[in-house]
Length: 256
Image (cartoon, rainbow, N blue to C red; front, side, top):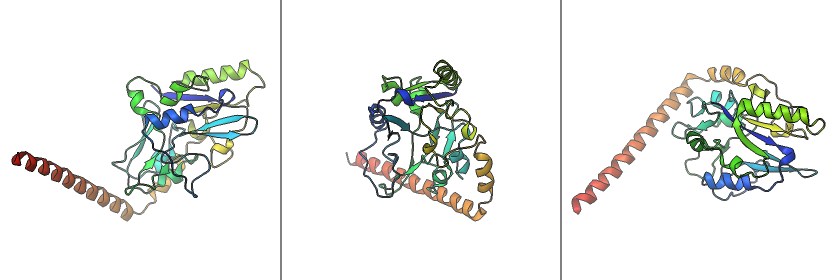
């Protein structure tokens, strides 16, 4: 069952409760602003943000969880993949740190954790652990204004189209995420243009993997071989660390 989030910009009051709930649920620390960071409020420690626009418009930005994610198609080791629930999730155990996902994403979502000795890519996971337990994401659960709601993607699209029909003139006649780049699992209704949420003002409806996959196929085999060697080395190091930890515990037990 594919789930999604529908955010209605006209209902958001900019309270930031969704931002706080995301940080608490994902155990994210206070962010240290960097001069090179984008001005959208997202970082390795901020997976959702509220962008303020004129006339009290507040737009939430987060991973769009594309139906055919370019980030996943660009990843040479499969560290990112789309789940049946709708979430695009990340496996740090597989990640090489190449950051191709960051370059491939049309919305500029994935961020690198520069504060860590061994950096990882960070982004919204749609609270995947909660979805597996039959719960909803923390951001939608905390929103008492109904500005951002959770449900089955098809149902949310029907609801969005119904709101457009019942409220002529209130919204721009479009459901953001219904078709762009093949469709996304985070949808929007808005009375202001949301083109600024992506690198391009207007994205096409063609899924981006159709362009990223041929590019990935052109990567030299030497690079992929190096990636395999790095994965092997990573496995060996972790294996040794695990054995050393086990041996240390055994030595402590024998002394007792």
